[in-house]
Structure formats: structure tokens, C-alpha cells
View 1 (spheres, helix red, strand yellow):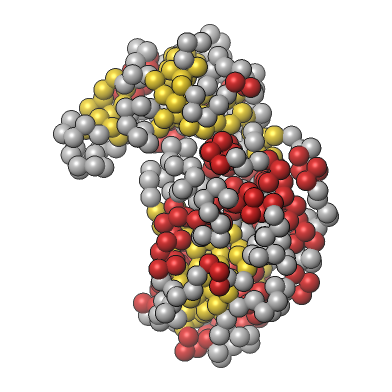
View 2: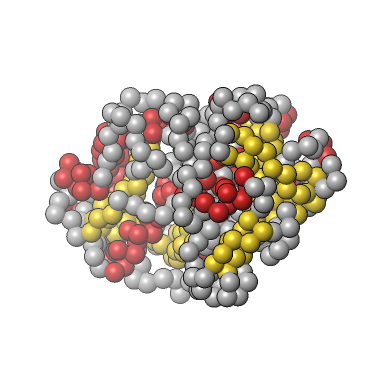
Length: 140
Length: 388
């Protein structure tokens, strides 16, 4: 791992630090309402469905489908200078309709990218204290 | 029907506009204010409200001066004003709708509204100072993955999904750019007026696939101003008034483009409300001025407003419907891709000028109804304008 140049580093707060602790442990955690079971991402202090404020992180399957993507050609930041072109993607988690997250698709030929394709989480350490949840084609 | 009490646009104007004008924000605002007041045939004492949207997201670089509503009111001799605002919501539409609402509510009778963009605030600063910017708030879930610019989340990913779900083609985005450029060729004030072909467009490289530079508006320094007033006063000025028939505003979701529904976003809710507030229908519209910060946004507005079915914007454009002389002339000034970025203001001003019949070679014959729209994703708004 080359950590000489880091990407923009997340500033975790009490509401979000579980997410980054989870990725460091190779777990994908999403905040979930303990009253009605609704997942809330991005993290919020209240459940949009039942207004409960009793929320807790829960590990999700790590499965997803590719909702959309773009192959970015320009780095715009030193971290990506040797990484372009890279695949920025929005993926939909099966745990709940419209539960999406932003990620990168890795281990996939660009020609093989297809909206709707099944993908699964894979964790990559990109800086000393930062592990990101990327996704790759299932079975790759 | 329409919304009452009625509000009219009676003065419109632009500052000097260009890539690097050397003008600061105050100077851009002053120029635009003078142009709009001259257009209306108005003096400062006619104005008792000011709304300006100046800030681009993030802190201003050192040496860049802001321009605020009360600063403008003082400089231009409007003060005291009965109402003022430093803008809220997306782009120009939020400022315009605030002013229209303030006039309807009686806080002021005549309000000058601005969008002032000083280019030193935006993309020119991308390459400096960003490296150390940490990703706080919701951006901690985007920036570390490389989502550094709106063109990835607002433009490229929605384009890709539109293509996958509806079969939209890159050629159809090209046809849109070619049509807008043709309209710009008829507009003396446009920056880009040279002919463009589909092949020219397709020969350009991707910035972030499937988006090309010609899918994006063109960043410039610009001040734009529109003056609104009550129906009671609207006929006292130089040109025939152009009335707000209906207006709508919408917000939904997480204020995030990258995890929202990328195909049916806030414009669909805006459009539903817009048409509920008038007896007019999409077929009554003579021309449309739909935000083109990125080309896919215009596609989404065509579908949301019901000019074509969801997913049909590509074929609708490719068939020539949006070209002058077609069923629905679209972005008749050439759009912000060609006249420069005004964050929606140009679409209001072009609506006013079309309905007044001032558009010369690009005039839509007998235009009396124009809809303009702004923003996309989690927030958006639209205004339907009609002649007297």
C-alpha cells in the first residue's frame, strides 16, 4: 500500500464513526432503526420512516447491484493521478429499496460494466487510517 | 386560473459577461442592475426589494469580495427596502421564487433579483487548496471515492443510467448540443456561435464517461438581473409585462445526487405542482427554456414537464422538435452552454424577451407562453410565464 498521498480523508463524527470503524474491520455497517427496521444512509439522528431516534449500526450482506457509474478520466486531486481512469459508481443494496451508496467498482474490465450487474463489497486500505468499501463483480 | 395575485417581470439585464472580465462581484451586480432598470424604464425609487444569490459553495478565496442584498440596496439608492434576501435554494430559481412570494405577500411591491457569478470563486480554484480539504459531513461518503465534482454525480451517472434504462444514445446528446449551438448562432450575445455537428461533438473525449465538455455549461463572470413587480404597477413601465402564470418549487431526498433516484428527481414534483396551478397545459407552451448546467438536466426537464414521456427526451430532440421551427423550440438563446453560465437567470430573461417579441432572428413567432426551469436532483423549480 502506498500511503504517501491520501484521498480526501473522512472527518468522522459521533454519528458516522461506526461506518469507518466498520470498514477498518472489513465490515459494511449501515445505520438501522431499532424500532421499525428501516435503514438510514447517509446517517441521520432520526428514522425518516417512524421518527424513532433509536438507531444502531448493523452489518449488511455486502451484496449490491450497480445503479449507475462513470469512468472518470481526470484526477482533479493528487490521489487519483495514478488511478485514472477509475470507476465511480452508485450501488443499490438489497436490504432495502433505494438504499444506495457511492463507491468505486474494481476488478472489472470497463467493457464489462453493466447497470444492474451484481457486485459485492471488497475492502481496500487506501491510507493509514482509511479503508474504503469498494465493490467488484460477484465471483471475480 | 393561474396563481394570484399576479406578479410580472418588467425589467431584465446582463452585465458584461466573459471568461475573465476583471470585474468584481459588486461591479457585475451594478452593471446588471443598471441594465435591468434601463430596460424597465425605472428609477431606484421604484424598487423596494432586493434579492441576490452570490455565493458559490465554499469559502471565497482571499481578495474576492462578495455582494450582498443590502450592499446593493445602499449602492444603488434603493434603501430603505421593505424586503431583502441573500438567496437560498438552488441557483437562480430559489432567489426568483422568494422574490415572487415576497411580492405576493406584500412585503415589497417591486423587487430586483440577481444571480452574480464571479468565476474566481468556482472551477478556477479547484486545483489550488483542495488537496488538504477534508471530507466532513455527508461528503465523507463521497469525496474519498473520487466524487470531487458535480459533473460526476449530477451529470455523468444520470446520463449513464438514462442510456441504460431508456436506450438514450450519445448521438442524442450530440443532437441536443448541435441544436442549442444553432440557436446560439442566431443570438448576437452568445459566446459560442460557430456551427457544431454531431460528428464534432462525438469526436470530443470523455471527461468522465459518457460526459463530454459540450455537455456542460460554460463558466463565466456574469451578473444577471430581473425586476418583478405587482400586476397593479406592471403596466407603468417601458415594455409589456410578462406575467408569472404559475410557479413551483420542490425539494426531496438527502440533498445528495449520488444516492437519489437519478431519473425521476425533484423536477417531476415541481412539474406536477406547476401544472396544477394553471389551466394551461404543456401543449399550450410556445417555447421552453430548461436549465442546461449539464445536458442530461434538460432531458430530465423535458420529461418531467410532460413535453415527452419519461425516457423519450432523446428521440424527441433527435427528431428536431426542440429546434426553432419545431414543435417546442428549446433554449432559444443557445443555453448556458453557449451564452455562459447564469445558473438559470438566462432562461428567465429569454422567456421575457421571447414573450415581448424582442428576439430577432431567433424569435419564436407569436410566442406568448414560455416555461423556464432550473436545477435538478434533490431540488428544483420552474416558472410558467405568459404575455398580457
